[in-house]
Image (cartoon, rainbow, N blue to C red; front, side):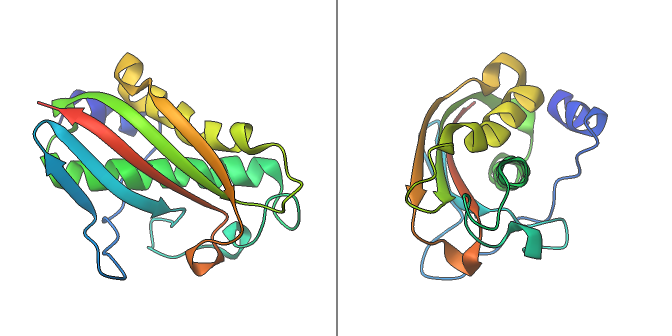
Length: 156
């Protein structure tokens, strides 16, 4: 078992089966030593979106639930990354995360929501998990999810 797998186990995290694409795209692309992972929703281990993660921040979704949803997105990113490279110890670093937060136009707390994903990357990968980031509020996301996160990783 890899060092990262051990760390995930310590954190009580089981990586789900990576979600299959639902349209005309691939879950990840590798170019050289970079892996770019398509946006991942806050799906649970069962591959489904929980009702508590449907809707908008600043309306029916509380900030702490949004942070949990972003964390789930990051777990799903790691599942796709493992499918791409086989061994998470091959990760050199998380280069960038992009977060999309389904929010009402007046919701100004986007950055703390995205911290759910950012914090998970650092917990799982240590200093290799520190990354550049963008966080954007959007009018809607697939399946009415409250958060979607994409990522770029450098690997060996």
